[in-house]
Amino acid sequence: MGSEWRPVTLREAGVALIDCVHKTPPAADSGCPYVTIPHLKEGRIDLAGVRLVSSSDFAEWTKKAKPTVNDVVLSRRRNPGETAHVPPDLEFVLEMDLPC
Image (cartoon, rainbow, N blue to C red; front, side, top):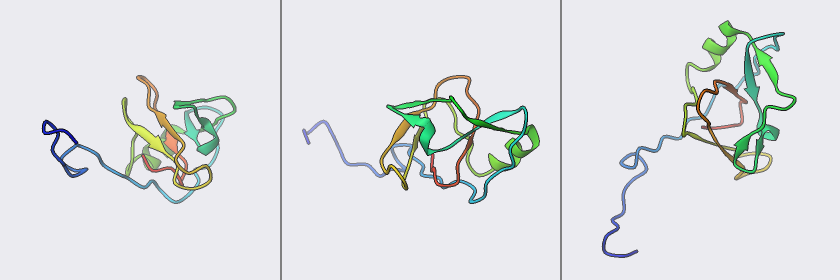
């Protein structure tokens, strides 16, 4: 590291690692996307084939972790290290094995 860089903790850098709810929300006919590991592709969230959760389940499942714009979602199991950037205007629920 050059002299202009100083080590900082993740907290000082504004990084939070949050593990999400360890349950699976019930599927709904309409609502918000439920993003799982296969939806993380090449740094993006691909909503093709995504299932939906109701608005009330969305509220319950995002109490602990609600991804927001510019967050990075990563997989720690199955395809470890796969990541995706949260784009503007996308609200979704994370699969239980996806920290954000």
